[in-house]
Amino acid sequence: MPDLVFKELNAKGTAFRALFVILAGLFLIGLGAAYYMEHSGHWVTGMTNQVVWGMPHVFAVFLIVAASGALNVASISSVFGKSIYKPIAPLSALLALALLAGGLAVLVLDLGRPDRLIVAMSHFNFKSIFAANIILYTGFFGIVLVYLWFMMDRRLKYKSSGPGTFAFIWRLVLTTGTGSIFGFLAAREAYSSAVMAPLFIAMSLAFGTAIFILVLLTVCAIDKRPLGTVLTERLRVLLAVFVAATAYLALLQHVTAAYWAGRVEVVAFVLLNGGIYTFLFWGVQMGLGTVFPLALTLVPRLRSHATLAFASVLVVLGGLAQTYVIIIGGQAWPLTLFPGYEVESSFYDGIVQSYAPSLPEILLGIGGFALALLIVAFGMAILRFLPVTLADAQIDPHAKKRLMESEEAVETA
Image 1 (cartoon, rainbow, N blue to C red):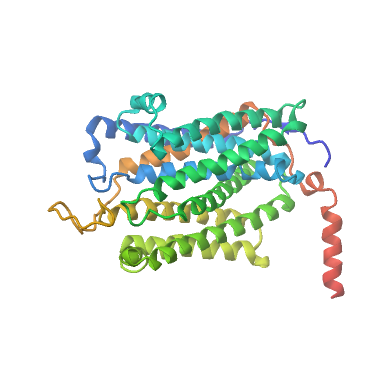
Image 2: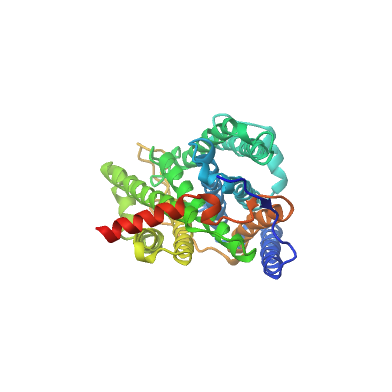
């Protein structure tokens, strides 16, 4: 591969400035929503004593999970030696850091007392999976920053495979830890499952790849940088594989739960008679977020940058629906305080809880998205994260020859 020239984004362009202003506005609105909930109390949200993780947690978990998957492109180039991904590897690492920052910002601002984060970071209960996740999140920042430094320093980039391998292992552990938050909760029948960890790893790969594709296409469009099909076709295949894997593990989660006699009812609640949760599972997660993206990515005549972007948007929407069903749907089902024992009380025993997200909760979540994209935009405006061109001739000089050979083979056949 010829040497590529990396360059900052043109921050003086009209499109960049307009996008930056929109993102800054959404971020400030999110901050305002957090302040409103902090000032008024959590009664202004849709959360209750039964549904204690609301819409901000859906956005936060989605962004945190996607952060791990966004690093996938960099991992493929450094760990698996696929040099064709190297030109976009620094952007992959930057996006991973930004998404994690956006997700954690939403999580911290939703706590009600953001200053209490200092307590969480200085007092550890190692019997809690939450304490382990604090270490995993902060470690992710440090490891990926070092990895990014190796990739962008001309003297060190040839040694980036070591930090890249460490970052790859760390992000797998991080996503396993996030999935284990739910997998270890025995009192929630919809959560407790060993499938949660691999499911969250698959979700991270699909969500992170979808967001990376959207960012790459957007950056190339607003900065007028050539983008060929060699890279996008590979990303298209990756997205299809990850979406299919996520759907398979999601179905496997419910099939294994249904095999356990005590959980048939909660499986039926999500899949058959759960109202909004059933609609989100089949209509948005499996329909819009799985079947349509697979069709758009696998049918040859539908292949284009526009359909790839549309498929990625659908994957993001399906991912948000999937996260909503897991987090909110799991809490809506009646809590089992003492699994394996019969305990009765007059406090919401056997009652399916209702939850309706309030506007401030949704705005806070959108603000987290905006913060992540602001970090990416600002980083690309001051540092060189992307080459000036990603045209096929620059990325893979032999692509044109292979394409001609392929066309000749088709004509001969």
